[in-house]
Length: 368
Ligand SMILES: Cc1cc2nc3c(=O)[nH]c(=O)nc-3n(C[C@H](O)[C@H](O)[C@H](O)COP(=O)(O)OP(=O)(O)OC[C@H]3O[C@@H](n4cnc5c(N)ncnc54)[C@H](O)[C@@H]3O)c2cc1C
Ligand code: FES
Image (cartoon, rainbow, N blue to C red; front, side, top):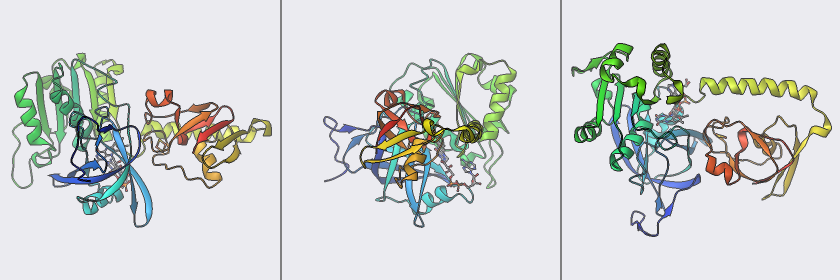
């Protein structure tokens, strides 16, 4: 079947889960940033909330490895979706993708998931603040607002190293030149080494700079994504000004966000304390319906750990409730789930759990 012969009337829509997709386009955005576009073998409408991400399931040198990437395209163009990846010096997956992923390659993705999105936090006056490749979720939201004629008064402030490092520069300029209610500001750290000079704002984003560019920033819903140092600086500016942080949303690209790391350490400590005190009677039975296997674990152990004990391999990437890779159906029983945005309310209502961060409150039966 010709894979890009799509019929808009009877095409299936994408739902959170594991999907095989084929790379159909590779775009060199800047010297170290590439966009990879994917389609499904069977035509699928890739609907998702702008800002959400997928987790790629790869095999590099014979080893399974997973990494999450924001969907940089917009669901307003749903026949394909894209991710935009920056090479990280010494990084395993980002460099592998740049060096090996070409048109025609097939891989599995998990998702879409993520709480950092324009649908769950609707706003009339959004302010996008991005640094470097952190632009990806904000670009998806902006493309969505643009394509759907959303009635938003949008201010977008992007920080790049040099003029040559501005990802999507031409497309941003095009979109923002067409709508008076969309305003774009670009800050470059310094001139290009090859000689291109930058006439706009220079250096790092500061409070006076933000005040000049977006005088009403205190009244806006803020979406921020970039390197940790950048987001820390933004939080510093906002907190100093007394900004109501319930209107501030951020996405972390680091493998292990600091807040999550603290939670994990705390959970591990709680688990250690609880492990000493556990009684046989407190053990919970985890049964796996598809394989008819079962195991008893302590209440502070996860469903994923229970599966591993009896040799069942539930796919897992982040291990901390961010990516959604380890999602399974809960057929019966109750769990305590400490996730970090890797599952939607709809999926929870439909009876799914993230096995890496779900601990049994009762005996449970899992669909795996
Ligand atoms: C929700 C989410 C969305 C993401 N979206 C994107 C995206 O749209 N585009 C994109 O390019 N990346 C994105 N990332 C980051 C991506 O998942 C990988 O972490 C990144 O590509 C590096 O992986 P690697 O295997 O190349 O590096 P690794 O081999 O894992 O790491 C190599 C070294 O780089 C450091 N490192 C790892 N990640 C980063 C980072 N992000 N910044 C600086 N140093 C780092 C590590 O500490 C280590 O020292 C996202 C991450 C998350 C959690
Ligand atoms: S492995 Fe990422 S949410 Fe469980």
